[in-house]
Length: 125
Image (tube, rainbow, N blue to C red; front, side, top):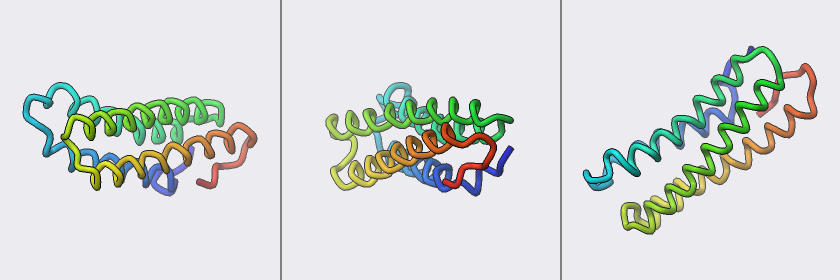
C-alpha cells in the first residue's frame, strides 16, 4: 500500500475534479441531474480509482484500477467536449479542463505501463 497523496497523477486528478465542480456550477439548472452530475461523477471516479488502486496489495490490482481511472478520464473528456458544444463551457474553460484531462489520461497510461513492467517496486508517478 502506498500514499496516494504523493502520486502526481492523483494530484492532477484532484485538480481536474475541483475544476469540473467549478465549471459545472455554471451549467443550466436543467442539467443538474444529467450532464452536470455525469461529468462530476466521471471526474470523481478518476481520483477515486487511483486511491483505491494505491490501497490494494498488488501491482496487478493497482493496474486494473488505473485502467478504470483512464476509462473515466476519457469519459470526462467527451463530456467536456459535449458541454462546450452545447454552449455550457466557453472555449477558454474547455481548453483548460480538456487540457488537464488529456495530460491526466497520458499520465495514467504511462503509470499503467510502468506498473505492468514492474513487479514489486512502487510506481514513481
